[in-house]
Image 1: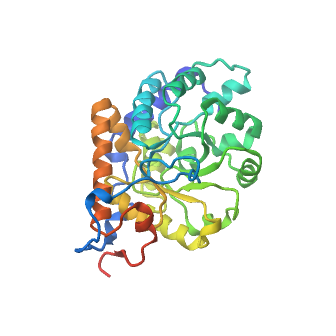
Image 2: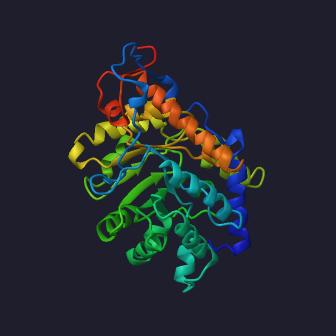
Length: 364
């Protein structure tokens, strides 16, 4: 379905507004509350020794790792207010050593297809990139667009940002319930294989709040995918979001009620990833998002196998309050993760991820 600029921008504004509505959060569905980290009463280290530095997509050795295992997933793009919000997030992420994803770049792809290489959205990203040259930035396209566009166009889009990776977001439920959705996913696996083999930029597969089942993960190629952002059930639920945008009593609005808790929880998705990718030498990086609301939540996700942990809605909420509020919130998340590491006797996230017997399911 083709939308004009006004319709597209209004949809993106709607998404930000509805993301801040608690009724569109699948609160408690992540199952992180069921995970218990065992307390280490005698940690053999000083709190000052705790290090959060973590490689990202193999960025080790000659390329410095990031200062934290955190990232802000892509969520803001496509409307006039986005550049200011993205600038606030980007400056903070670069300063604190967080990675950052950009919002859907469908608009930029369409501009390129139309021969408009000077679109306002592309220029805004180029200008921002000059301010944050060291930020690890992840480009972002939907699977519906990946099926239809060539690898050269996607690579050009990533290059225009100086992106270190390209996320292909998978949002079947959202597209099915979105009034102007594009739920045409036939050929999706072929598109993923093509992009993984033809792009010089690493590819990340990203869900958008419904997680990954073990069956889906098992269908993915053993090699080629650099990372998987599980984005499990537990945070912003895009089915609910699209229902809130739909006309009352429309099939989409009524369907959103039916599918209000649809998806695989973040914890179940992490368990599935551990079982499917049981060989470290061929394992893609596992990025965990979807209901992460504290540094302790982040520690639980890392203990379950996550390499990197994402905060979306909480980061958006903090950024809307300004740079100082965002920086304070980010510092709090880092501090809480350090406390969790110290109290499990782990010097860094890698130790927590690889340590045996550090967690259990509550009640067992």
